[in-house]
Image (cartoon, rainbow over all chains, first blue to last red):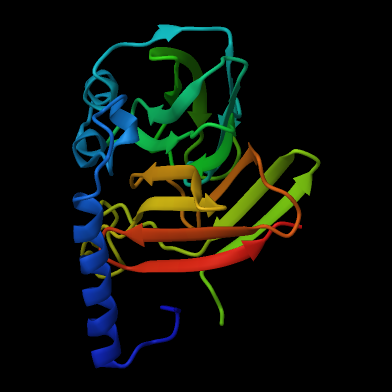
Length: 161
Length: 103
């Protein structure tokens, strides 16, 4: 199934129909009762919150402690705030999810990843940053939360200065 | 079939490394176009990777993920030639799916 070509009107309707049916189906799947907030379906609420602490609370229901076992890799200075390469790795065991927060963005939560058994707890992605801000990575391991924070300076104007 | 999803999955013994690039505007809903009108939010919310009938990686994204998103991760338990199924859905009900062979 492709959705890339400019579709015929009825074809688009059919595709949209199929998607909403699929979404309805997802809603009724018998997910195991929330072992961790991030194991559930799309955390709409958490993505809407402006404040980093609130978003963490809604997503996970607890607070994180800083840990040197979480390694956050981000540039000191990002010349282009629209594309900031950020990655995280950890030596912690039993990692179930990893989330990224950009404190000064309009909505702090940027991305949240579910790490099933057998997947290595290391992620690289690219995020947008509205301005210079702390970037926080939260790792959920064995039911506890660990965090790493790094400040990334975003230069405005794109001249690298 | 030009998919919006470009994926490279390479097996290195026990570990499979997956790099994915998706074509998507990832509009935040906060940016104005040249006429001064807000461009409505349009972004991928969920991206899922399945291998051998099991979810190996699930991403929940907000608007702060860059345009044409890139993500890299690794997982265990797959071998060369296995199928990796990738699918995404966005906030407007759009979606795409592709299947890649692990090389």
